[in-house]
Length: 188
Image (cartoon, rainbow, N blue to C red; front, side, top):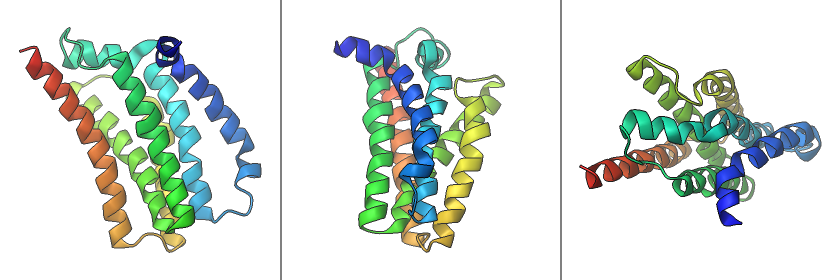
């Protein structure tokens, strides 16, 4: 059963993302704008993950283009990155923003923006499409910038909060790069 979940999480995530977007006016009614805009990043991310991972697209792309046949990303690793790593991080960001300080929304904001920039940078470097590029540009950039503006407007955009948000987002992405490099080094 766990193998099926690991292999098919993206389809449930896509459907959950659509549902969370449809329910967002009800769920976020009365929320501060910064928190509501950061909440929207979760279902937006789920839609992005569909473009990125449908048919195991991103993992196969990474293994072929970066790994040159070496499995640098396994199905289990992709699952861990996306479920606890992305969904969990955004959930913790929202909980901390609600309970501790509104600036914690910046963790979710920068997670989205750093991911978009990573997709764009990779496309420029490789001079080709990579899975997730389209939604990274079309969804992540406007939603991320909007949530960033709302966090600033709501008083959560202190320098410390920006540093925390950006540091967490970069650390998650750097962890993926480090994992890929370790896998490549192990097969060298």
